[in-house]
Image (cartoon, rainbow, N blue to C red; front, side, top):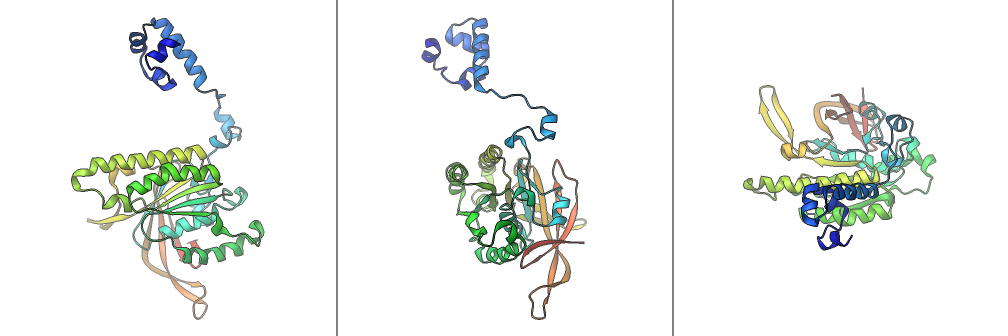
Length: 324
């Protein structure tokens, strides 16, 4: 209609978001004509067949409607997480230094390449580093153990490193350029099934003065919005590492994830990793075939689908392994 073009109401969004009275005032159309216009526009915006809860339960909802689960590569951890990391929302892995956060993510970067029947998503990973250089030597070490277990499934010539796409960013602007421009292109052109940010803390901790908390919250919101959009559009898990700070209370030292309440309200799942003062002897590649390993613990702090549970684990040359 010419009147819509003249009044610059030339998009679905502009017509559907304005009230009937506003459109009538701008265009001169009657309220009945405005309602007819809105109905026709709404019918052409989307044409999606309704999906029932039974359809979803029986797997008839289509690929994007099905919640996927990515195995951690450890049966005990998967049991605590009810199958692994969900392809919904953002999963935060927080913890103190040397608690195993990056190890956890490296293990996910390997397991995501497995077929779905083996707990993977049969795809690669976009690994965004904001702090140190990507730990390629450690990945190579873990890959050797990974291929020993899954060589028959993946093939003897399979190279897991070819499916790990690494991007290094140094500040917020570079991070947003990555997630707004480079990451969508990567997801569109390759079979990437996992996004990891290691870590989200680095670009937000030092760039903002005390009076710029609102600005930081706004930037956090922009980042989360884009990550959630990409995760939802491609139905893939999004994992972000977060650092912690410590405070003293009546019961002793308490670890508090960084970035405050604004960030906590934007994530769906929070998993806390920590070290204990205990060790365990493992059969490994030490001098006498045995080595001492620090016992660590994984705790689910909050998640809509999980109970608060704690699992003990160790880290050996092959990765993270739960213990009883």
